[in-house]
Amino acid sequence: MKLNELPVLLSPFNQKRVRRLNAQSIRENGEYVLYWMQINRRFEYNFSLEYAVNLANYLQKPLLIYEGLSATYPWACDRFHLYVMQGMEENHQLAEKNGWNYFGYWEEAPKAGKGLIYELEKRACAIVSDDNPVFIMKKNNDSVSQKVSCSYIVIDSNGLIPFGLTDKAPYLAFLFRKTMQKYFVESMQNMPLKQPMDELINQKHIDLNFSKKPFWKLEISKQDFISQLPIDHTVKPIAEIGTRKEALKAYQVFLDSKLLHYGEDRNHPDKQAVSNMSGYLHFGKISEQEMVQSVLEKQPKSWDINQITYKNGQSGSFFGGYSFIESFLDELITWREVGHHFAHHEPNYDAFDSLPDWAKQTLSEHEKDERVYLYTLEQFEQAKTHDKIWNAAQRELVRDGRIHNYLRMLWGKKILEWTPNARVALEIMIELNNKYAIDGRDPNSYSGIFWILGRFDRAWFERPIFGKIRFMSSESTLKKVIMKQYLKDFASDLDTTKETKNETLDLFDS
Ligand SMILES: Cc1cc2nc3c(=O)[nH]c(=O)nc-3n(C[C@H](O)[C@H](O)[C@H](O)COP(=O)(O)OP(=O)(O)OC[C@H]3O[C@@H](n4cnc5c(N)ncnc54)[C@H](O)[C@@H]3O)c2cc1C
Image (cartoon, rainbow, N blue to C red; front, side, top):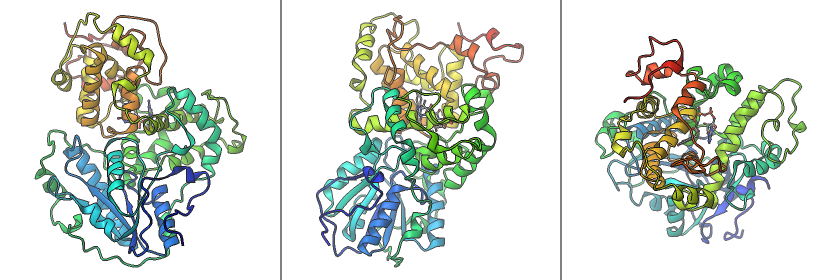
């Protein structure tokens, strides 16, 4: 066995998901293969876990799955902590029921878990982890892989198109859609296994007696655990529960009652036609592949995946079948994955300078334009602008950890309009989105925020402040979008009872 060479453990198509991050060999006398579950926090339809199982089988070793929760990640707060803890409890229960080796750790104080990954590594043959191009996952992978003395391999389990199939950052969704169309059928023929743990051969129990306690031995409630941490307690938990069980339940509701209306109604908050899956996708509770597969089962009986042909990146008629499915899959695959591939190839994905040249130029040409309204971060955060729709969207973000997509675009565009320049707007969008949104800190966060400033978009007519960047207004939003109930829920200062039509509402404070 040549332990400095990695065996090929996935299909040729999925092998493009595999990246080796250091030059260390597999440790021959290691006790187990370690899977560090960082963001694909699930046991099903997970290529990283599947690869780890295959490696364990190849080496005839058992598998140890490690899932952690740090107390010091950026924007750590009650909201994200509780969500992750709920998911980890579910994972622990499943592991216990099935006799899997699972070590789950909640950091009791900042830096209390320092060194744990290296302690786990000492007994490991190799570490397999999740390839994710942003936030702490990227930092962990880049740094830990250089400090360990066994092989460190990351697997891209983010979406349908493996990172290895693009060679540079796509600067337009159209360009990524071309790649997606080329490989879509092959990707669906190379789905991840539903139950990779069923394939594990060596089921030997691993003694989990590490220097840190697994969370189930802490004898403290989740609420008490959270309240003693020095994290942001002002960002409160949301009603959504961070388990896979809840993710599957929510998705089933979408498939049964909302998908049919998605194409027509997705832009109207009152119609509630969207899936609300972005939090679950972000924390890896559900895989994009299984979502796509379930949607395709809703196509007409006469529909056949083998009839799909390349459409040169054009949207609207690629998948065939129902147009509402076409519309949903374009968001779920093209728009979701373009940001992942962009960040994978562009290390400065979160920096202003990563904007296209035309966008930087036009924004700089209009930097000195007069701004009628200017707000500070605090004023934005507290929803204290003159615009009641904007304030409503911000209240939704603070209360529920999300903003409906259409209003999220308006929310960002107005931040650009009401700040001294685009760099300040960028900082404010990143801060508010990542602080409050359950789906924040994701490649998609940077896609959405940078789209506001021109990424993945084209030049429009020139106008003040925005230059050639696409503009949006609250007035036209009110005309186009059905949101009476939304405004009742989030804009109590707006008297919606007297009016019969959105257009006549008094939208702005003088
Ligand atoms: C300023 C701004 C910030 C954003 N920040 C985030 C963020 O932090 N995290 C995040 O996941 N998305 C973000 N988006 C994209 C989009 O708003 C959300 O993905 C979508 O609203 C999530 O709701 P849903 O799950 O009900 O979407 P659905 O409409 O049901 O779509 C299903 C899935 O497709 C993907 N998707 C849908 N629309 C988009 C889109 N426009 N761009 C990229 N992917 C999309 C998401 O993964 C989503 O969960 C942002 C958009 C903007 C304009």
